[in-house]
Length: 71
Picture 1 (cartoon, rainbow, N blue to C red):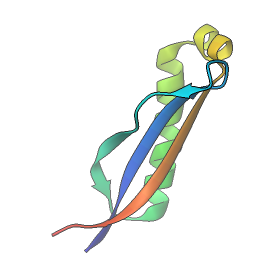
Picture 2: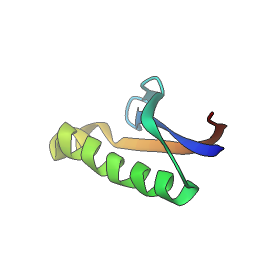
Picture 3: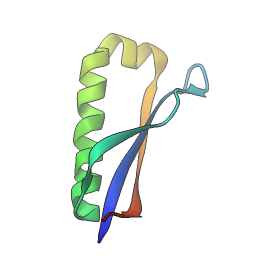
C-alpha cells in the first residue's frame, strides 16, 4: 500500500542555514492530506517560535511528501 511521509526542515534566511530535516508520523493515506498537514504544521511551528523570532531570523519552513510503501 502506498502512503506518504511528511519531511520538514526549518531554515533561516538571515543565517543561510537549516536545521536537520525531521519526519512526521504517522504516514498519510493521500498526497493531498500530507501536503495539507505540512502547511498546518508549518503554521504551528512558526506560532511556537513567536513572531519576533520568525521576523528576525527570516524563518522559512520547507516540506516534502515522500511516497513510501507500507505493509
